[in-house]
Image (cartoon, rainbow, N blue to C red; front, top):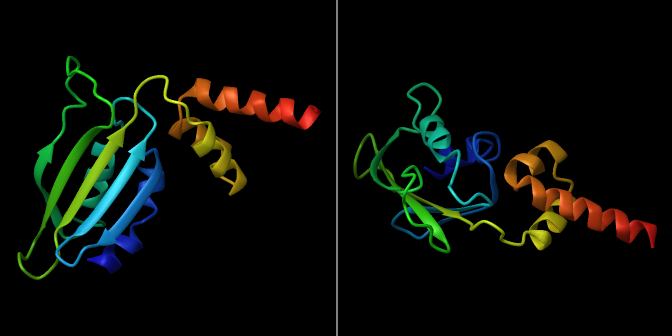
Length: 149
């Protein structure tokens, strides 16, 4: 399963807008912990579809889904999460996958994350998709001010 995830790692960048993804094997299952800067965890359905696609995806299916971000009246809570449990096509042969997506509240300060991603060369178009527009604009104005000093 690890090899299959590694070959599809680009999906976490192209099919979703996560600013941070961590993945590990705890011996019983693969854990994926993703963070999005949007209060409603957009794009995870697109990622799920591509991860499970019969032609290009992993040999898995979403077995359990605990997600309230699609409900317009769901009350927002700090660290709102959506959880997805995957089963393999052949139970017992592969470790299952657990994906947890953390969504951030409106107004959260992303200055540190944006600065780090700029330092490592993150593409501007991806940054504008991954973070709220006002957070990127604020960071860019702050950087320009620092350069002028």
